[in-house]
Length: 248
Image 1 (cartoon, one colour):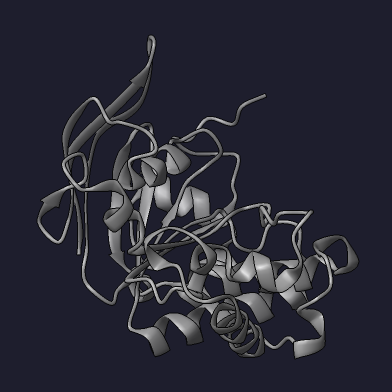
Image 2 (cartoon, helix red, strand yellow; image 1 turned 180 degrees about the horizontal axis):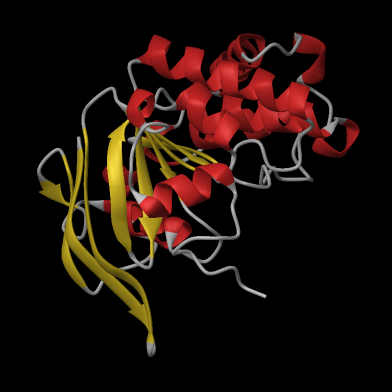
């Protein structure tokens, strides 16, 4: 579904991606782990075409992302942003139906509202939430609304950017379970970036460790704990000792 071959990206003299190779199969949930500043977000934005990579190939079902027609290409993606990124001036249902109210995916207003309410139900929120505004919701409820928005247009691919940031352990578990259930139900391809190991274990079919601009290790989540890669082992254990230098 998604393939990255020898992908490089620099910002001025700073090399962020130094030859990333990664393949994600259709319907697979891949979680990319790595420390802050290792290029996880840049990698995600490069797949979406929000950042143009310098060299290498990024393709979606064999098509170079740089040659795709933008509206049709982006219509295939859903996105759960790290901070939720809800629009404060819009009601909850308008946030969820954002893509259904404009562009190539536009639906009649009443139909868009019905879809939004159905997606809110799917993430465990009652219809009476629909006409509230984001500021009237708790952090956990806002994250659910963001998840509902990500799936509202039935995307082929869903990206999750640090999906449990700012949530307590219990709510993090709830969100992880919802993500896993929804991805399986939809048959969607999922790409998640996180440093939360509980999310990794709950969401991933496969894990890829990004460090210093390259994939250091990639494999099934069930093999992660027994892997002998020193970068992966240090990251999982959270040890200060190892090849990954702590930024002080």
